[in-house]
Length: 348
Ligand SMILES: O=C(O)CCC(=O)c1ccccc1C(=O)O
Ligand SMILES: [Mg+2]
Image 1 (cartoon, rainbow, N blue to C red):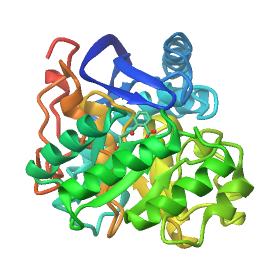
Image 2: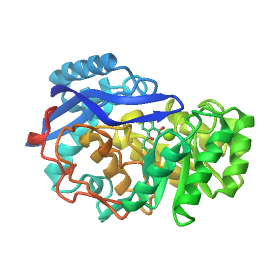
Image 3: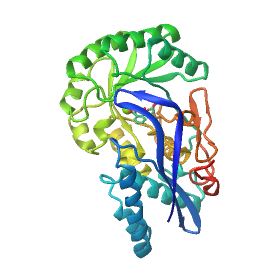
Image 4: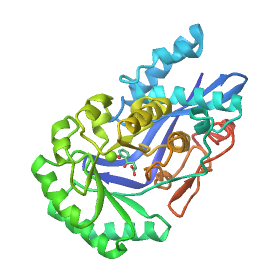
């Protein structure tokens, strides 16, 4: 196992109710397996995953375990609850190598019978003034997106209603709008927002209430605006959410869940229970974005996913093969993730 640290500054920082993301630091993982090399990415986001330091030491422990017991021992050393980003990094490298050895695109390693050329994606718009928000959404629509997710909860509910109203006026009814409150609202604020958002045709709100308020989320459901849970999945107690009927949609971040395999398993489990999975990045380098794209590509009829985050980065780990047009992201069909491990580096 070979690890290479990297740091990727954002060209376009993402302002949310729980702070602004302006740089992503992590580790590229390379692993030789079945006669080929696979590549993975561990990009921790404190608050959602372990710290960078814990991620690095998790990977060092995994490398030591690997030297004794191979990839199985390395995977066993990486606890998804303790070091999800580190586990994501190694698990992705292993999956990439396996899919390459089998000669299939990574999504087909999850489902050999599947063919998927592209996945619908949403544009992601941060907090900002009503004018800034409407401009950002309008330029996303000009670029071909028909689904936009807007960050809310960083300002009073009435101000967010004004922002969403301004952009609904600007782009018309043909564009699907979602909001993401990142857990910022009280139950009372959420009720007010849901009432007003219903008139503005908002599809769903991600994480309206704090992560642990499962009952509050269950009570918000049933109207025209759906409830999507994201931060509530950080503790990975998905069954609790499904049993409580607390969500219409689960937002699955492979980096937070301990790898693409875990995200795919939870997506299938949600589907069985009548809840729709949506896959998103944590604003990652191209390796982790591709891993998330392949998870989404393995889900039949997946809703628009939060994968179109690459253009926020000022620099990337390698050229991005997954172009977006008409609101859809192309899925690489070459073996593995679709990026040459030899081309992946912190200086791409
Ligand atoms: O879902 C998207 O559109 C992009 C990803 C995103 O919003 C995000 C990125 C990093 C950390 C948290 C989140 C989030 O969904 O809350
Ligand atoms: Mg979210």
